[in-house]
Image (cartoon, rainbow, N blue to C red; front, side):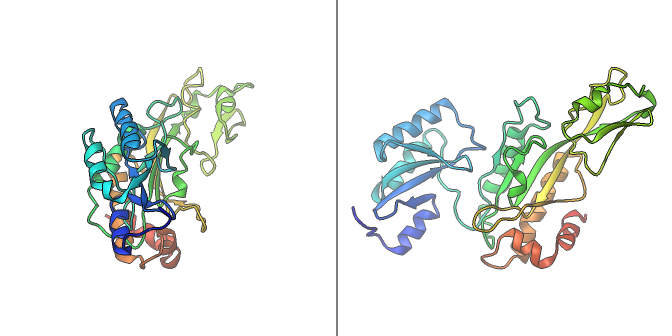
Length: 295
């Protein structure tokens, strides 16, 4: 086939279902959703079989951890959907809505400070699946990072969560060691022994938790776990680094409630065609933050 022969209306309709036209053809790529990139072996087999049965045999992985199966004829789209549904798989992830959630592997990573798989799945169920009827001014991306290493770049999403562990310092236990284990453990050089006592620059500390438990005298025996939230990030032709809210949230429910407020704020205050970053810039970060943090 040399060109798209179906109507623009039909092309738009199936795009809303997660089928993207392969340029210059009547074939489509199906965007098969995963929950934060995690699929079962049975689902992998199903997608591979679907690629051979309906497409060109290839599976491609997107930057947001979905799977694209190319080369599906327009008249096979519904049959394809029914085939993958046998393993609980669906297509989608397009349009001016909340998009599927991405996360790092913080659940199993040695540096992870939160269960990124469980949290991102909860966000997916609550805000991707649960907000399917919520039309927004533009797409809305959410990412979950298990620690400040920032591997999945949460601060380049409309909303991003990063796990935190805030060190609890008991300076009375500090012996002022010449070779301080806390200093050695800090990857950012913000922990210093000053006048015989360990100090941490609170403005520069990234709350990675690496210093916790390192001191043999228990100067930092524990740390408080929390959630740092960034808003207004994006990448592409226009780039914006998200800014963090001034509060670190102590509970998961607090963090989820802020995400919900951010989505609904964007729905109610964003202009058609603008990203959340532009809404924040137009209204002012301080005003948006105030709206998100108020009870």
